[in-house]
Length: 440
Image (tube, rainbow, N blue to C red; front, side):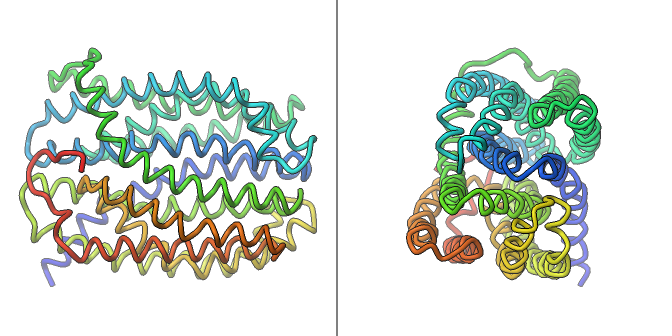
């Protein structure tokens, strides 16, 4: 009993601050959705198209957070603080370079991208405006990912929490002011989010650079480490690409169904993202604590943590399901004034609620394997899951089955992920001990 209590304390210390830090990012999207949603259905559809494009770009770079958590936590667990923070700084340099390049790319292709993902010309106009302005925030978003991941690796969950709560409050204030006070509409929402993201990025980078200085870790760019960080991130990039491809497929199918389904899909996706980030708190504990225990050479401790976190995943997934099911009848009214959008959302949200217990376990196992550096397996598993999901979601469009069936297909997606992750964790090939692990 005492052993389980000790394990629970470790998970609790990481998961609780991680939960509050994680939900600040989707809260920005929820705030934008609620503020823009009451401007009109085309505006909400434009946000849907733009946010899935931006989310795809940023999501593909989530390896900056996951990779730095895994490698920094291993060296931190082995007692090598200087190396851990030096690697953290290298991830910041990689994030800055990637962010600048991707920001210019998104701005350059914002017009055709908006056209492809939109259900009408008017929706495409709003999507283009949001994309073009939000491209300025991409370097900041990637810096936040890298800095947050590194801080998790050294068990500093407090700093990202405070910084992102402040950024989130600033985002809401600025968006309300720009959208309704200055009457800037969709452009105002994008501008407010850009300022808030840069505020959070400057805060986190400053703290991490100062900490590296105190540990006498190098802060200048070191090409070899930056290239190695990018190489190690390739499998996680592939893994994330498969996840984002699934969201893109759903958005394209929703756009083909019309303006109302596309707008409803934006609200449903924003709520699902919020729940995913909340449930991901246990996965962050999985990443951080798995990296530490493996770095310290403790295979038995790693297995005990994994088993306990699976239980936590089930409990939190059930809690999320109950809360969402209870709120499904009235939640749509917060995000849209269009009765058609509201009516489309209620059954879809009930389907999403039923999926949450599966999601809780999936996110935990994903986090454990990321923390173990098992990127290659996650990449191949992601490709397999996408091959299962693609026919399901495309069939919704081909058969004109209706919006709710998009989220039934999402249930199939989560079930396929659970099968691949559960199979892996039952073995021991992923439990490589020591301060470093090759990118396999």
